[in-house]
Length: 121
Image 1: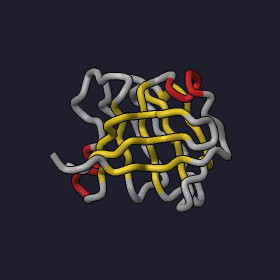
Image 2 (image 1 turned 90 degrees about the horizontal axis):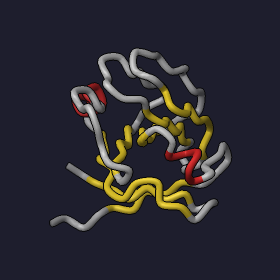
Image 3 (image 1 turned 135 degrees about the vertical axis):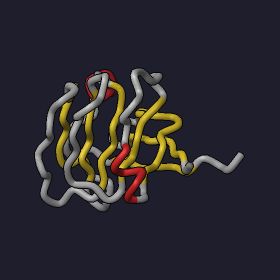
Image 4 (image 1 turned 180 degrees about the vertical axis):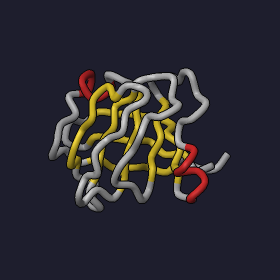
């Protein structure tokens, strides 16, 4: 599985050091289902994606909707389990992070996010 570092360039903050990238139909569909915890360094990047749900999930998450150029279009902070998020027009990717990450890092709409590939190990 491809892993990336997620960095908020606008705030000079690392949002995730080893986020998984879900680019296949199956992986996008599974998302975080079945997980009950993760560390503050984890995350999930879903490409392409313009809406998420937290059905069957066991933990709240922060959700960042990104435009194709990496600009944050919308943030869903602390999305609780069993919720359906809105369809975000112009969203090309979604980053799911541990709840509270956006607040702790000051991440806001309009910030620029980049993904840096981890070298294969």
